[in-house]
Image 1: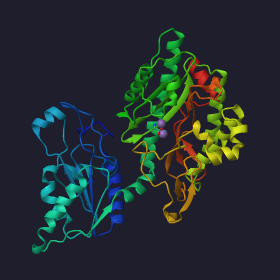
Image 2: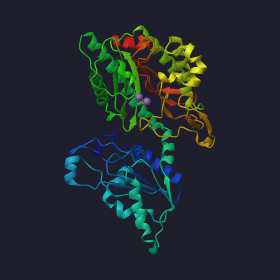
Image 3: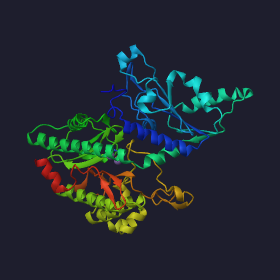
Image 4: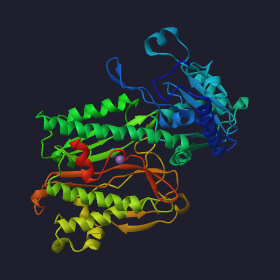
Length: 476
Ligand code: GLY
Ligand code: MN
Ligand code: MN
């Protein structure tokens, strides 16, 4: 077996994977053109306190192009297709403390780069690599201190112009190229995302069943008990860590959109909202389920739950190649707005009919976020939300709630291979005129979808969403 380098990511690199990353680098080289050079650092390490660091997590762009997960590493890709890796030099003593390093000597053979050097040689080698290039590409506004570092290399090149050096005249944002590449998930990425989704779905099932089981046997349930179940299931199946801070919110806590799993009591008659997903081999999953702690929905809980579910069904039906990114959101809002009138959350004598509710955004009191986002290596993944081919078509409108002037550009057209979440919700904070039976109910239902030519593939449905299925699962 090959030794394993860096944090335990993907199974030791196979030839097939090496080719995959080489192909991505070749595509990038082609997009920056023969006179371009791209510089991509991995993520910095972060101190937590004194001599303890936060767990290292590679930079997504860097990993997308290399599959390499050690810290202190850089890629330099030139338009002619050469790729130079800078990585940690071998160091017997440090490797005893921190783990094996690949080292620059082994890197070309192991990960398919053209050449590799110690990261300690960055400052001496970068000016020569930049010499004679027209444009230097790097991710803008993503790595603190990167511009200063690049300025330094360009400065040392310019200081030698009398010796015939030629510094690049243009600095270009590499994110625009890489974001577009990452927006379309290839077969390998889709496979990893499906596996991550399956693990996360299992974790939700485990937390639901544990919750009902503890309540049935008279134990006090706290939010952290359920968080522990999620973590257990993630790690049990090889996930490296949660893709984001897990939300486990009992009762009214669910109305706090960014609530984190805390110590709140989970009372028997309340709903629990869990928004949690694991990261597996560099890819995120993102699932929300809302369920009754004791396994049986009350009338008002069920009424609102069915409404959110119907709005999600409408959003799913609107998710397919050729539709706009905003179509699922608009479909959600239509169903929710009508439902809010039907169940009395909104008073039609005050807010008018469904068209008025949408026009004035009166629904915003109970549904204040978008219905989805791209998902991939990052849970809120990169990729333009406006359609690149229509970028110049700007219309201006006045926002009904704030009065602000909003610039609208045509939303992105969905294409096969894009991945996004579909996550409508309803959050009812107590307020005058809001029926008391709905107070402190917070519901979100979130699934991850891969767009196909004819619709979308929901990859997170190994955990049920229908009321009867959730109740059956929690009885089991
Ligand atoms: N868990 C973050 C989100 O749903 O967007
Ligand atoms: Mn999400
Ligand atoms: Mn989520």
